[in-house]
Length: 294
Image (cartoon, rainbow, N blue to C red):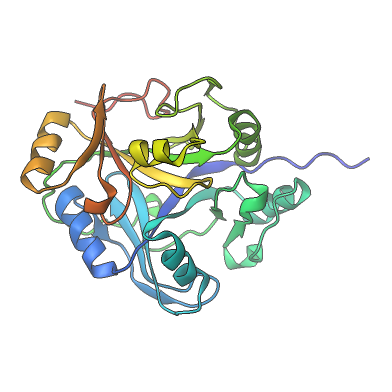
């Protein structure tokens, strides 16, 4: 009998990916508000089909994806869902071994490991689009590249606090995502309200927060500013030092606040590139990085 294959060793978040209508406008907005700065720019064909590239945001990386072909999957997704979070990419120790594990556990990969990156089909990953890579990119600060100087942000953002996903069946889907990430859930609150995470998985450089997809799309719209009615990567949370300062900036800049609770606020996606963005001045007690230095 063959030994079970080991799960992938996730090293950190390779990047989150945003699907946008205009690369230059998106970089300008995120640069102005958050200090985001480009690390690379690439016109990519299959299987990515985008103009854009990876950018430094706080202590992490965000890939900008503007479709560059009308019939590409990215263009169809943008037309159907509007600007959104497209996928979460995770850096693993060995992609070939990770692909063997995924395919053995019902998560089919779509790109040969020799390319240095792959995707798993959402049908095998609780409906969430996930990318996996073991690339050592020359532009990547995690491999020693310098981050170019960026604009002074209106809202200082020292960290990406977490990436969020909506799932249909929390107990089942958290178990599935934890298996594929090779990391047990940090907590599980199956009865958590829709505006609080049911679970979290450590990504070594932050948290992957899992939320229940509201059964009522009116609730989804009220909580997250968008109601697509399907599991997906749905939010990025940015750690700020002063939430009142951030709220003041949003008021001056006509950025609507969808809701505000203890230690966090959610801005109106219509005013933030069509993306749901959470802003928090609280460190999660289970953040693997520990509290933010003062």
